[in-house]
Image (cartoon, rainbow, N blue to C red; front, side, top):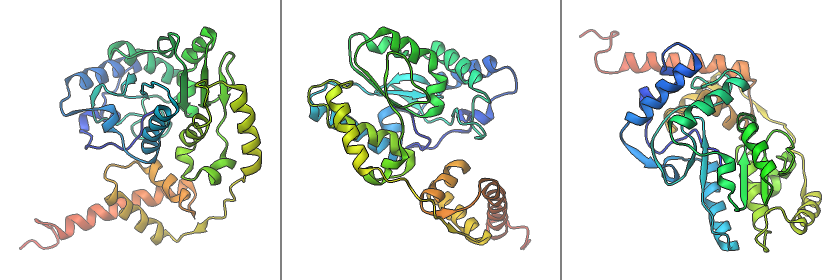
Length: 305
């Protein structure tokens, strides 16, 4: 599974990728791994992540146990590499999402170089190492699949029972279930958790303990063709003031949440705001909120007495 942006504890400024020193990508990766190694206040990864995606991930583990699998949970993370979920790490802010303030890579190639660098420094594993005769269920976003493409190809060459839900492209040797937005209504939830909800639905049909089962594939296609319903994006337009109010209230409710995540949440709720406009209003809302706090708080310059 991929990690999530929301964390159970606050992220220290030193563990935000935006705070890394200027320099080469490998130099930044080395600095990042040093900060991770020195940090305190650690939690098992299972307990570190929050949000709908992670709730569904833990539900997937329960489904696996109910179906008879003896499953282990591994996490793919831009901050710590590929790690078993019971390993302990500090809260961190790092992502492969382009344009995010805590992105660690501006291109796909940089993402692959970063992945390799932190993997070796933080004692991370690789996908082929997980195979070892086991079934492997991968639930990956487009961006993570591109970063991990070499490991995915190596996993495909190893053969065996492997299922990729999501991903970015078909890979020889891997059975892939591409993300299908037309199933969102049937599966519930938001688009952010679609891949893991698809994985839950697929796994619940694996009664013979085989992920890449032709029988399951046939049943899935029949079910999907019956329930597919493409989303109609007839979103409610908002005024500038309404968007800024949403930004302020949601930022207070989810401290540290990224602007891009706020925008996705707004759109998932059925309301409309174009990305560039949202970014501009976000800056305005944050400036106004800081000014308001400064003017009404202790030591306000507007009331020198």
